[in-house]
Image (cartoon, rainbow, N blue to C red):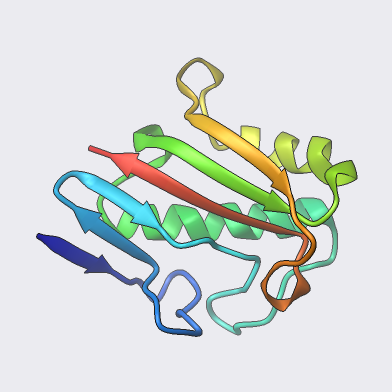
Amino acid sequence: MKKIINTPNAPAPIGPYNQAVLVGNTLYTSGQIALDPKTMELITDSIEAETKQVMENMKAVLAAADMTFEDVIKTSIFISDMHNFAKINAVYGTYFNEDTAPARETVEVANLPKFVNVEISMIAMK
């Protein structure tokens, strides 16, 4: 049976989806972008600030499912410019222990919602 996960500590969905779905002990998150959950304004001052907001949003979604980044087994990172990869990776890396980091792919795409620079989704398991 699936359980819908939503928290006010991450941006509210802006379409027909939820922040995450828990099926058994596996959490499937929707992609997060750099929306401040309090103001619903985009944080795009720098690619580092944008990535940090994405990761903080993801942290809130994981917490709502009683999980942490240590429970993440797979991430998908979508970026609008591969030239930003190193900066995104540096911020992303601060949220994981390198020895137990999840599997991941990073893909450059033509556009992302609201024309942001980075979107990240995750799969986590307890």
